[in-house]
Length: 197
Image 1 (cartoon, helix red, strand yellow):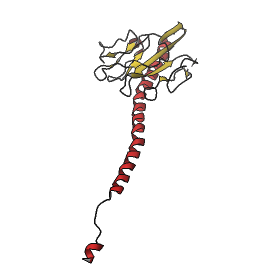
Image 2 (spheres, helix red, strand yellow):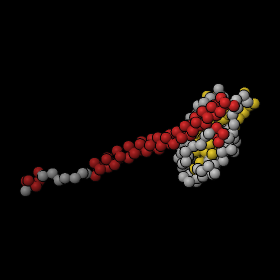
Image 3 (cartoon, one colour):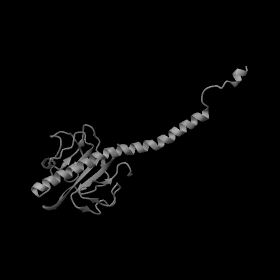
Image 4 (cartoon, helix red, strand yellow):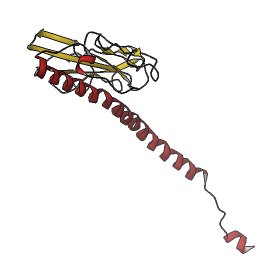
């Protein structure tokens, strides 16, 4: 009888279980938003990388011909299939296209997001730059824009790049990472799909 009273019963009390659940809940509340933000940043790297590729291709073409063009095929820019972002160098471009040579509208200065993977076209948040070639070459500049959805809502993450040495006040009134201006050759974010309303 005494052994039975001294013997402790195994298991956890309700309070101990509630404390463990509360700790897990707090950790999840901290970790999940950070994980979503990290995923979005990794998706944004596609836009930054491809805008830098457009910049490099345009600069190489300018070195040979003393002009910029609004035709992706001429400068040799063609993103890999599965692209989440639409790329424009001539006006607005926010479309889903087949990632094939016949499906993409290179000459129109627009390469849409890959329609095989991303069928829903997002609404453009804030336009960072007017895409296209401005001025009379060889004293001209170009601007390119990338628009895509990184968090599966209806608004698009919007990026831009320019050959202009400084594009001051271009990004005013936006809700992105870069709120004031962007330098030539550096991608700038005008509308951050994750942190903007």
